[in-house]
Image 1 (cartoon, rainbow, N blue to C red):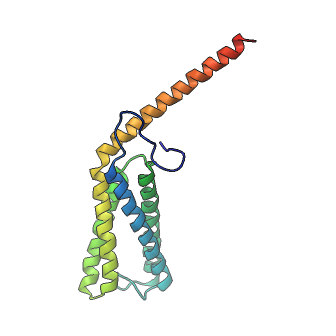
Image 2: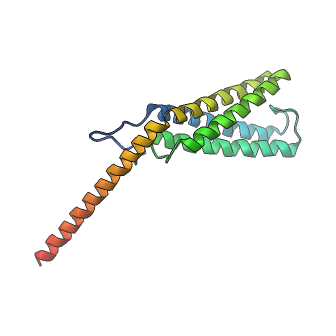
Image 3: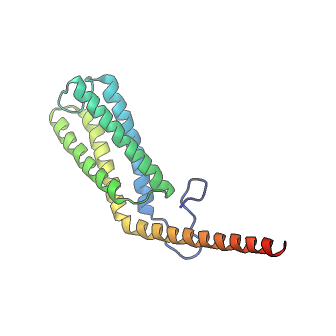
Amino acid sequence: MSDGRGGPAPNFGPGPAYPRLVTIGGVVWIIFGGLLLLYSLMMLWLRGDWIPYPRLGESENVWWGITSAGLGAIFLTQGIGGVRGTVVGTLGTGLLSIVFGLLFLWAWATVTQEGRLLPAGVLALVGVGLLGAGLLALGGRSDFNRWHKAQRLRANREERRAEQLAAADVGRHHGSS
């Protein structure tokens, strides 16, 4: 599935190309996964001084920080896999991205009403980014599945060919002794 250098396996001969929508969605996940990790550090470090939600106690702030860090890690790793062509599928992360994008936009609406513009801006940016990446992942899903199936078939053919060559080589060595 990989070319050994971390990129998508090259397409030799006929076969579907790696879907551009999945690559773009992967880049967006990398960016917003990183932003979520930074956001979580801010939540944990500032502990209440810069909370984009209605004023929470310290334990809730820690919970939001840890949750944001987990989401950031998921989106960052899935984004890297989406760009490199090593993810197995895009459905789960795409749906997760849409759900959390909508949740961040809901939080944006709440914070905007409170007049807290800086946290509202961050929430809007992350919400729109996650929503967009999720829609890109779902939009490129059928092309990705076709590409992934072609890569598996190609890898299986190459593996069988290598086994046949190894068996022929062993037979040749035994016959010459």
